[in-house]
Length: 431
Image 1 (cartoon, rainbow, N blue to C red):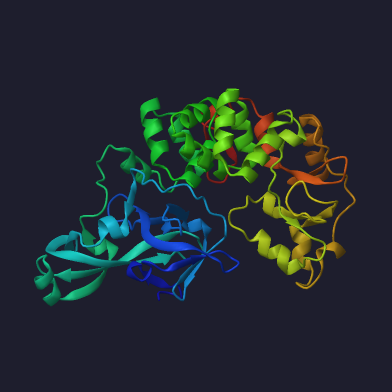
Image 2: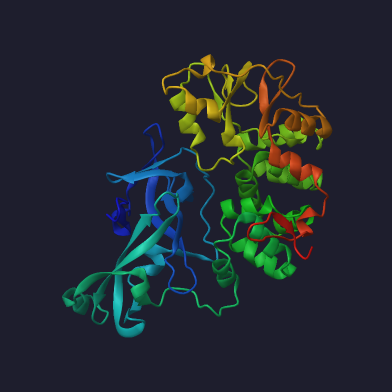
């Protein structure tokens, strides 16, 4: 335990059960997937290899893990059951890192060769990211008899060499490690200016969630090019990881036969959302909206709403308010009753019912409302998100201000570089 954050040795994860939120077992952990980084930076933990009861091994991202404790892993319940395929930048802890011979160092100088017996992983404070932080090693030469007598010790990841990528490497692995801390929009700008060959290499090496975030920030031509170079099953996975409205926009640019092939590979619920969004004209509220706003029933409390708003996967615009509807909770919902803004949630006691504090004064957007009408609505009422409701009163989704801006800016707006001078606002580079 370091600073109140639990440390878990991966040997304790081998074979433990994985459960969904309802307590049903979905499989067992068979390996841990990590991504090595440049120099002596600790590897990032990407997820777990989980073996289902059918013996199929799938990938469970750490973003879908809600807790690891008491000899079990609890997930969000959202699992992709496609077979796990290791990517070029990924390493398997049990399969590739344990029993490896590495060099123990002191003050940066090599001291002696040791054998890796175990590594520990730790969740970073105030973040959902996990990384390897310690290595449990045995001194002495390899070989079962000799190892049994060697001294064992636990050291920081930075105290050993023989794992990490080389700084001067030219492969996609080193490039990814170099740009690891970039925001998706900034990494998208890097990819846009790479050669097509290198762009495809980097895209293939990114994990699904990261690639999805980056694709959303790329120009349309780059999106189509990258998606077309992925294996079809992976392309479907990446589309599922994208915001539904962005994924639908991308799909709509593909030939019809490609659209249908990818939709058939997606989870049925995700494919249904895509088809629904693609049925609307692009520059309308229906074409701009996401189908995954925060929907609550009238008997939900302020505490329930705040718990949903805390979801780190939500954009700030989507987390700004919740939409109160009668069942069903998934879009299209039952009758839309109104909206509760985040600020109002902060002002009322946790036990307050959301139905008692809804704002139902503003008329929601019609799905066929044109872009100028939607933009005028946002400007008039200072909104960051707005509900889209059909003639029957069902909530179809929500439009966010970032999507409105994205469709109102010139097509080549991503080509304009911006920088922020100290004490000044953002201005175009070179102006």
